[in-house]
Picture 1 (cartoon, rainbow, N blue to C red):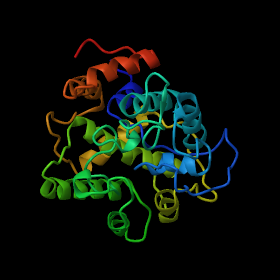
Picture 2 (tube, rainbow, N blue to C red):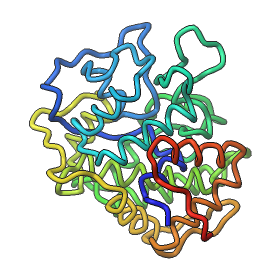
Picture 3 (tube, rainbow, N blue to C red):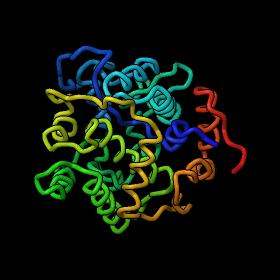
Length: 295
């Protein structure tokens, strides 16, 4: 069967993660007028601290992999898979780099903001591309998320309900709304990553910590990364829990009912996107994780 880290990469869960170890605390500096940022607050935060290129451009694979492990304590296999998925989906395979925005010197590569590669409709805090700015945080959407917490921590119940609300709004109002298996897994994967990396061992996020990562895109004072690595197995448990609390339809395929079904769900999903089979093979080549043949 498929190893879960490879599954995460296939579905485009590349944009988000966070925590602190290999790199010492680096001073915070907001982006300048020529610096690029993405719809992902976790990678934006790493860039704002100079842990990865402050310019937001031309990240080398090893630098990002190391940063994701050091700052957010992602397990090595997860960090590697997410990084190489970002390169395949939004970057440059030849140079093994990707950027938060357009690659330097390129007029065709839009980085992590490329619609329906990693960026997707019904984002927790960004508007749909069809409505305009899918890049920057929307204060109204972020306020809706926090209001669901009633002044308390951001928990899996809060994020699951906000995920359903965002789905319903986009499905009703966006004539080009897309929420297939890739978008489904990415959307719920972001819930898991936020809880596990921003929330640390508690797997819930205080509003102050949430504000720091989402509004200021800055590592909060006193932030502690998870004491144990963020694995794909742990993420999958949160994904299923968040989904089952408030299920949302998936275009094209029924959702997997158990974690055991996840591997074949991913394989079948790859056939629904033109780039899916090539991405699957690329990630297998980069990670050494074999593609299952029993689906």
